[in-house]
Length: 183
Figure 1 (cartoon, rainbow, N blue to C red):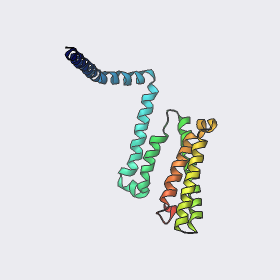
Figure 2 (tube, helix red, strand yellow):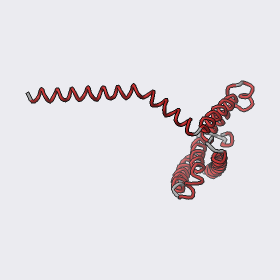
Figure 3 (cartoon, rainbow, N blue to C red):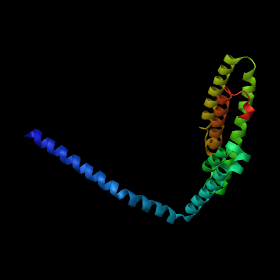
């Protein structure tokens, strides 16, 4: 008898949790709608910012989608799309700061990758692989550690992250590519 009562309680508990879940699923679209409306109503500038990002993405996508523009710019147009997505901030100052951080991070990483590739190129393929691996480790660990410094975290975290990403992409790709400048 205890066994049947216990199974009945489990079955009842199962159905209660199922109906509770089904009720939450039913209410979810309304909750999303209210949340979206509330965010836009609280600060209409967020709606305007969203429309600006959408417009910027559309214009930058045309570089890739329209044949004459694509022939002039080429595959690099995809980088412009990624830049708009990543750099656009709610404020002009935030966008400028992020853009400068991205530019400096990319430029310094590219120069450093070029230098390391130049130094690693002379002795031979095995040394080159070891040298590139050591450089990736040292710079990866150093850049990651620098990101923990409060001043860097506050002002330059994005730039350091872009530096790390660009450096690793370029230096690792350079192992299989003859001319790093083409990269």
